[in-house]
Length: 91
Figure 1 (cartoon, rainbow, N blue to C red):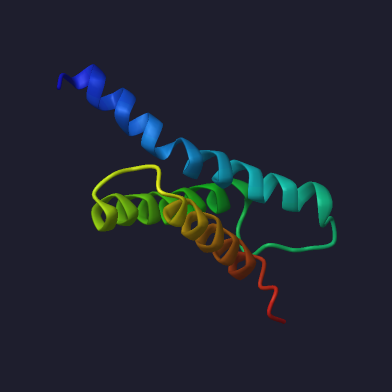
Figure 2 (tube, rainbow, N blue to C red):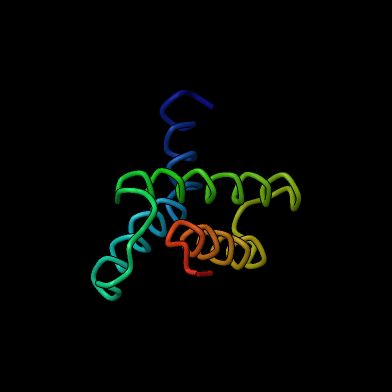
């Protein structure tokens, strides 16, 4: 596998995490206007991307292949939990 193929595969693997990393803070800003996040928008995106990449990497390691629904469910739950924590919603 050449470097171009590796880059395309990595981008395909991280695409769902990137989508959620941008969607959750943006949706929070639009839908929950009174919510005051602990971090700026771009820090939330980076944090959620890191959480999502870790979950997808763990799912790839655990199942031995990409694209399992259990991994995607865990991705959604982990990024939603990280967003909930960054909003300090427990208070």
